[in-house]
Each structure stands twice: as structure tokens, then as C-alpha cells.
Length: 230
Image 1: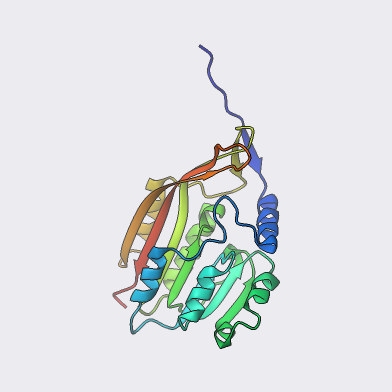
Image 2: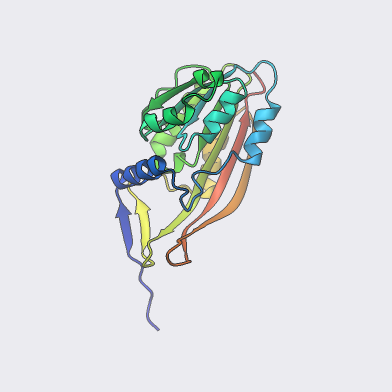
């Protein structure tokens, strides 16, 4: 009986950046459903926000812009941050109505954007797992440190990630956080101490359209944190 050996290919951050720039420019709906509308969970959070929460929001890694648009339409002044070219979202917003004036688009890596104000809502969907662990901690700690009102944070983060190429080779992105569900839960419990936190877990898989095989498997953590003690 022979032992099966797996070779792991290291994928550069630059190539990941190039992939998403191309996908956003072309409006492609990738295996991860990049063009998907806002989730039902997020919609419920947005609808539940009451008085005492600033009408400001931060969307870290806005991607196709659907969460940014939803918050702006709901009356929030939104800072939208992503590494992709800002002109793509700006073209989408052009001529759509007065609500677009509430959106401030910033072309920046999520980890390089300085959170130095009180945002009523912070969204980080499918972006934090690409960062290094120190950068994830720094982003979340800054967001919490500047939360001085009745704030809401909505995060979707992949843990226990397995990626495979079309040839079945394991793939890992350079420097990615690589959290297990347990280590990510410990981080959330530490950073959001004193907040009302709901942590949900879902099995997630994405299929390679060329082979029909799973190219991405993970456990998705959805964090809904409310600073109700403010």
C-alpha cells in the first residue's frame, strides 16, 4: 500500500489581486458567486439597526459593490474599500440617483485602510481570510476600538480552507490567515469581549466548471456582533 502524497502550490498575492481585478472589470460571476446579492442574514441585520447607531458604514473588500449599494440606499454614508480599480464601482453608480452621493470609494488593500472613526456598521465579507493573521487582528481591533456607539459588525470569513487546482493539486495563497474554526472563534471572543456576538457556521464548497470537481472547500464563519453596551 503506497502512501498518497500531496504537493501544495503556493499562489502569490499578486496573482490573486490580478484575478479579482479582471473578474470585477469583466463583471464575471466567479465560482464563489462574486456578483451575488446581499445575504438574507445581512438584510436582517440592516433592517434591525435602530436609534443610537451612526448612519455611517464601512465596507471592507466591497467587490461587486452590492453591500455598499444596499447600505447607501438604506441611508448610510458608506466608505467602500477594495484593492480593485475604483472606476468600476463609480461607473456602476453614475446616474443612479442622489443616494450614490453617500458613497466614498477608496482604492486600497483592506489591511492598509486606517479605521479611525466610529462607523455604525462595518462589513467585511469574504476578504479577511486572505490577510495575514496579524493583519486580521489589527483590522478587527481597530474597528472595535473606534466603535463608540451602538455599532454592528457583519463578517463572513472562511476557515479550514482547502483549495485545489484543475489537476487536483493543493493550493495555498501566500500569507493567508489559514484559521481553523477553533482559532477563529477564540479571536472573535477576545476581540469582541463585551459585545453581543452571534457566530454561525456553514459548510461551503465551490465547483470548478471545467472539471465538475470541488476547487474550494471551507467552513464559513458568519459573525454578527452588536455593541449593545454603548
